[in-house]
Image (tube, rainbow, N blue to C red):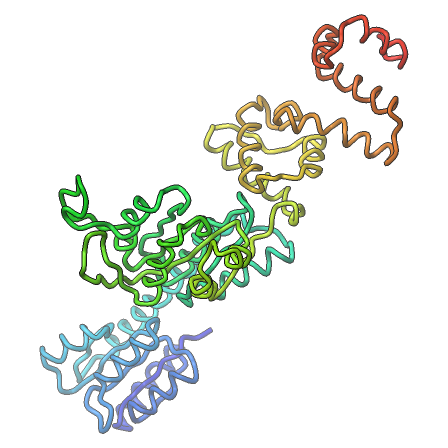
Length: 450
């Protein structure tokens, strides 16, 4: 599609001549005779470049430059004027103009400048798109799959990230609440600044106050100098208050004040220090219940709960399990210089039947262990943790019948233990907690002898 150029000049001949030259170059042009009309055109459609005269009645070219760069930062602006001075040239460039072109100008010079300006805009758009793709790849790898709950979560994250509002992230331990917070930060306008997570349950009240707010010199024994707190050190960025439900009530009062006033007072200080940060909070607790029982302040809950996100447990998104396994296998294979790329059907079967009380974090640990133990390209049952290996027996039983007899259960279990013990009867008897004679009798009874 041809680049679109807006020409702004109150002299009709100059306007038409420039438009003619640029149309011959294959550009789409729109010509207006005032700065006011130029801003109206910019509001209605997208332009790659604005070429504006400097001296015009009403809104002058300098204001066109300023407003265009402020409202439409991806659009380049070239100032064209017959009243060129060093002062106006410097001012135009400071306001963001791509170039300052004095009249009379050479047609070839105009062609070159226009192509350069449009190329700059194209490069900027490409960089922005690549940055967006990279951010998406970095932030969404564990929020993958077509599970309806995950799609809703991702869509909500993309919608609220630029809004700069407080967000409360809810979910079980290990579901990826911190990942969600990092994603919000990276997709926000604060992404170039710092992201920091602090576990509110890891400190007692005094230490937490010192960590968050910092302290003044001699605020307490050993405070030899001023120390900025974490809230102050994240100026312009985002802080995640993880396990907010474990924050002491007295600290909740202080946090509420920070949210209301956007200022803080260091420990031992009196001066109010303004802060510009986005606060996110996360918890695995039911804060409404905590409010009802008096363990969490109602006013703070409402302050935090501007937007709430529910991160579903892994058991509710088992359809994403294979994708997550592939992601973790690649990550740990790359880290260990291995080529582990597959899970055996039996190993995958076990994972699909496992409840994952530790959620995605537990799956990550399981795959890291398996990749470490694997000697080939495939993760087998023997590479999984022992408690998961024992699921094989239960899965087999469930598939045979929902109602197995006690004898059938015992026979299947003994056969499985023998297999796990490499048919070593002494080892199998020890695992079963019986002597070799008792095992031999059961093997005869169930026709499991060699």
